[in-house]
Image 1 (cartoon, rainbow, N blue to C red):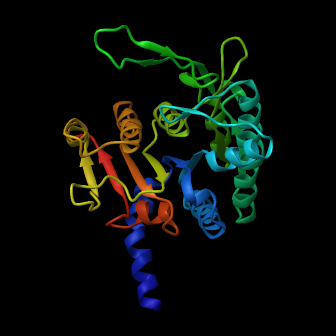
Image 2: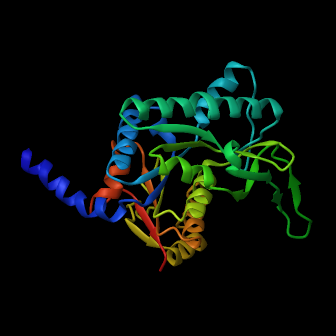
Image 3: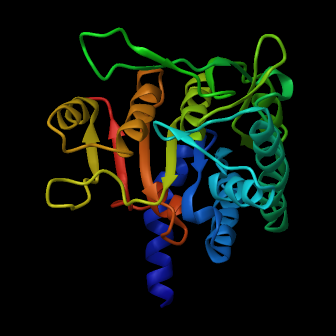
Amino acid sequence: MTQNVADILIEALPYIQKFSTKTVVIKYGGHAMVDEGLKRDFANDITLLKYVGINPVVVHGGGPQINKVLLAMGITSTFIRGMRYTDDATMDVVEMVLGGKVNKDIVARINREGGRAVGLTGKDGGLITAEKMKIYLQEDENKPPEIIDPGMVGSVTKVDPHIIHTLTAQGFIPIIAPVGLGKNGETYNINADVVASKIASALGAERLILVTDVDGVLDGDHRLISSITDREIGEQIVDGRIKGGMIPKVECALEALKNGVKKSHIINGKTPHAVLLELFTDSGIGTQVFTD
C-alpha cells in the first residue's frame, strides 16, 4: 500500500511542477454538486490545487437546486432549446439560489478543508457584462426565422478579470455564480459552461475543466475518447457522432482553445476526486481537447 501511494505521488509530481503558478478554470456541475461525498471530494481537490501552487477558479451551476426552490414556490419552469425560460420571478430565484445558497455552500466546504474561498457573481467588480440572448428558430427554409424570447437569459459580452487577479494574488480561491449584469443594470442568467469558457479565455488559463455527468466524448462504440483535436471534433459533429447535449460542451471547450487556453477537459464528476485524477495522472479519466 505504501508503495502504491508513493507511485501515485511520483506520477503526480511532473504535473504539479507543470501547472504550478498557472490558472485552472473548473466548471462545477452535475451530480458532483448533489452527492455529499462528491461535494467533499471536490472541496478537497480544489484546496489541494491551491496548496501546491496552482490557481483554481471555480464557476458553478445549480440547476437541480433552482428546480427545487421553484417547485416549492409553485413556479413552473419551461425550457427553450435546453435553456430555462427566465422571467422576472424566475430570475429572482436563480440569483438567490446561485449567488446565495449554492455559492456559499461551496465556499464554506472549501474553507472547512483549509482553503480560502470567496464567493462572487458575475455582477461583482464588473466581472461579467451581458446582454439579452437572441434565439432564432427556422423550421422551414422558405420562411423567415422565428425570434424566440428566452426572458432574462444572457450572452456574455465582456469579462473583466481584474477582481479574479486580485483575489488569486492574495491566496484566495474565487467561486463564481454565472449571473451577469446588463448595461442598464439588468441581471441575466447565463449558462455556466459558457461563463467558464469566457473566464478561462480572459484569464489566459492553462486549462479549462468541464465537470459533467458523462465520461467525456465517446466514439461510435460508446467508448471514451481520451484525447481529441479541434479538427476531429468538427468532423464528428458533422457526421453525427457528437450530438445532443455534448455539442454545446465541446463548443465551449473549443472556444476556450481559440482564445489561448492550452487544453480543455470534459470529465465525469461522479468519479471521486475527478479533478485531481484528470490533472495529475498520465491517463486521466475524461476527454482532453486540444488544437491540432
